[in-house]
Image 1 (tube, helix red, strand yellow):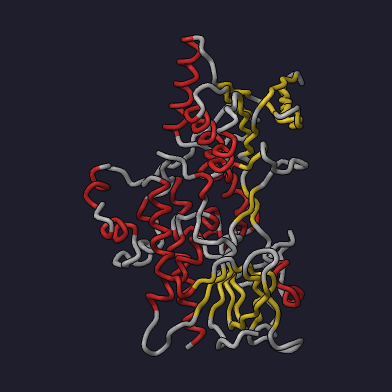
Image 2: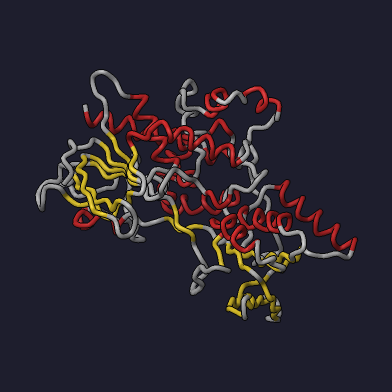
Amino acid sequence: MDADAVLDVAGVGFGPANLALAIALDEMDSADKAVTARFFEAQERFGWHRGMLIEGATMQVSFLKDLVTMRNPTSRFSFLSFLHTYGRVVDFANTKTFFPLRTEFHEYLAWAAGQFENRVSYQSEVVGINSATGPGDVEAVDVSVRVGGRDGTLRTHRARNVVIAVGGRPRMPEGLPESERIWHSSRLLDGAQAIAAKEPSSFVVLGSGQSAAEAVDYLHREFPDAQVHSVHSRYGYSVADDSAFANAIFNPEAVDHHFAASENVRQSLHAYHANTNYSVVDEDLIRRLFRTSYLESVTGRRRLHFHKISRLVEAAPSGDRLRVVIEFLPDGSTTTIEADALVCATGYLRADPGPLLGDLLPRCRRDGQGRLLLDRNRRVVTHESVKCGIYVLGSGENSHGLSETLLSLTAVRAGELAEVLTKELV
């Protein structure tokens, strides 16, 4: 084990969730108790959805829902503070929008992360978390970290608490692995750049949510001589409900409501308000794509194609291209497309933290569906012998509500957890 002193907090992952926690802990430090924390991130540097940083794309949440403002409006880590640092407050105000460019918000996140270089280890993948004290009471955990990539060295860090925030992993259609010509939308920009020199003439995009619509729009603009085929299981894109009343599902008190509710009520809330986040698209983008399609029908120069009520049947190599077969669900007829690339905007799977927990997992409780059971503070409910804290951020949508995996309450979640951690360490 490393000779470092025992950490108060070991963070697994350093995306927005744990970055916000690092800030909250920093701002709550006092002369009486400074929390020692270190975060371990598998990436080489800070990055957040780099593959979807499309030029001109905007955020779907207000800049006020940054890393800190909902918790501490005076924080020096706010988006406005970032703008002030770079002399852009006035110009941003003149845009008259609450929704920054996605590239600018990524720049903001990287700016904030850069102020914690002394507390984060990059190229450091956590591969296991085990009891540091054997089969008895667990006062601390040993966090095993692989440093330097797949063939890197293993190091162990001991901590009194661990916070797991590893985000989601791309979900691909069953039996369809990624390849040079088949990409998940999270690799859109890299994939498009790699194939650009081959002068592609046809793309297929699978999916009906925001990422799918953005991919269709981007490919149509970026490759002006290419055909772009959009495949939906429905009639077309549905509008995201971002109305004021519906958005209350992302208010801080909604977490308490959801957590206290029965399973039936939780499922109903998800069904009622899933259209605030899942398989929905901003109305402005829908209008732009429809206008483009209509214009092409008028001029007779059609490049944008919508395959409604359809599904992907096959995507197989065909020479140096792909043979993509689409089924029209009402009558079972098929269309075959010779494509240069298939983009799967098929969402993400929330990683199960369980496999990381080694000999601790048998002491962790699960719900009726096999998920780790979390308390209101997002601490894994364990056997009483586990004295240290195991916390999970971003994986408790079923227990904490729709906002759990989103940026909306990032600052609030971080503040709540930082308070719990600092109180426990007093």
